[in-house]
Image 1 (spheres, rainbow, N blue to C red):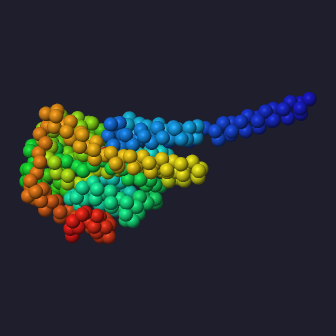
Image 2 (tube, rainbow, N blue to C red):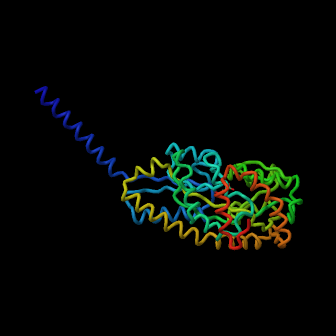
Image 3 (cartoon, rainbow, N blue to C red):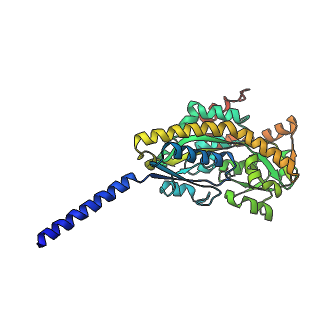
Length: 335
Ligand code: SIN
């Protein structure tokens, strides 16, 4: 009698364990996608489109939660969270990988790329593709490049030529190249998370910043920066990244479908980003809150010449081959 009860209990426990395993096996894979910008920006739109397509095509297999505006993780901790698999997708600006690879700093070099189309060409060629794998030793898998746009300089003063920026303190992303970009023109810089930029500009802690139009408009930076110079001096793009241990643990067929969705989203984001930035540029002008300053070719050349010494400072860290490959994508290839 006692033995029968024990056998029944063991059987029940085994059944419970099995059904628990089945339940676990049927549980959809959860992908938390965290980012620091607004839903309306190119990255914000890309994250939402990824969620939508996954819900349509992988229902029950994969679930996506999107956390915009630093609501889950911010610049200070998002990459640690990814490496600990607390979040599974991020798309940090390329300037934010400084501590994991120096090669990606190529994207921060001022006046290296003539425009977003040149950036696009570089990202598609062999050297650009290779950089997607440059952080594998840190368990960071690069899945795609997403565009935002070219950066503009905003400030409390009208900036026409580099000497106008002397003595101002600019907010920068955590990149040594960007720090140097401002020091070579006699300005100061302060590394701050994106979530703190508006308050820092409003309070006067910093007096200037550099951002694409979409980030300026969506975070209302134009309301606290009376002047924006249309310098297009550098690029602010993203790398869509996952934790490589997590990513390669996804069953092959599901991962293949996810990668196809990522290709589709990447195409959509990159096709739309420039138009979104131009629309936000116009909204800023229409708001009348900030004066948009166009530079003459001579003025733009003065910025280019003043910032050019930064390239040589970082040549060894980034790699001459990487910089050279980037230079060749401009229509008029300049040495
Ligand atoms: C972002 O676009 O993700 C933020 C960029 C920044 O920190 O300036």
